[in-house]
Length: 343
Ligand code: NAP
Ligand code: G4F
Image (cartoon, rainbow, N blue to C red; front, side):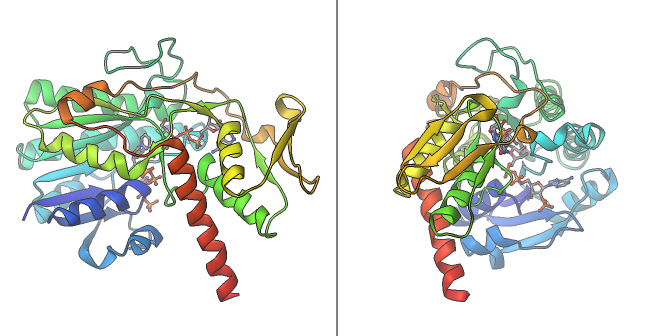
């Protein structure tokens, strides 16, 4: 049985990856912060919590990382733990650098010291491209990050490439575009929309406040993306890969698609921060814009070209935008129904 160590197992990707690896007969170890409750709701929702061995790990503490890797003796490490919320990174630039940038080096250095044959996956991000003028972006597109998160992640990406190229470690970096699911945190825009509009539909909430409705993202399904992480570590040679759908939609289009699934007809009035979305049937304003949710800097249109992953890993996303929005919305409807039963 192969052993995998997943950092950030309590997060969205950690949960789906744990499920995937267990289905592929791995022994799965998952790290969590000492202060975080495990197993957490996501692993419980997937019904895999009891099959995982949990270990406490602090990304700021090199000695602790060394001790965990010695104890677990993994064949593969999937490094997913990070402060991943871009909006918050503007408030915590020092902390995010320590966790999202230096944390990667600490793990790689521990691998080099303990067992250089351990295979390593780094969760990098489209945010590294930032103010890019080239669309779609490929693995060769220059990086111009626009926020502390993207900047810290870019360091993590480069140090992963350096350890691969100069120290011969099997270290791969996935340049991940936005990927969502019913397990997505509610602070991210997609889940905020599916949850709030569902609550509005069932009379549990009145309005949904959003930031920039014109922002565009390349949204895929998290379950598809974790398979590609695994494929990277099964490949004979390590490399960097874009994981993306190649299509973008605006936040406004996401709202419209969720409304369609919920059979709400939205009509838009006003411009920019004065935009409101009105339920055509009831005449109620159900979507408003709150500039507090605007970012100090917004990335330009990020859309990825995943053709390298397709040709070298035989990977492509299986789930369409419409399917993704539908499955997320249906999951939130299910939660409302459960809430009603328990109320
Ligand atoms: P997520 O749901 O936010 O999960 C992040 C995980 O990191 C959680 O398990 C969290 O544990 C842990 N974590 C947070 N801060 C930490 C800290 N200071 N020290 C140690 N652990 C910490 O993120 P995700 O969506 O699964 O994303 C997984 C990885 O992919 C992240 O590295 C993210 O930056 C990257 N990524 C994600 C996307 C996307 O669209 N989802 C796109 C590009 C890149 P707690 O339970 O303790 O909070
Ligand atoms: O859902 P978001 O917060 O995700 P964002 O910033 O794109 O970051 C996610 O994807 C990255 C990959 O591209 C990851 F690296 C990162 O870890 C994370 O998973 O925001 C998406 C867009 C932004 O343009 C934001 O300005 O939605 C816009 N937005 C509009 N209203 C909002 C809101 N975002 C949030 N969170 N909340 C709003 O009310």
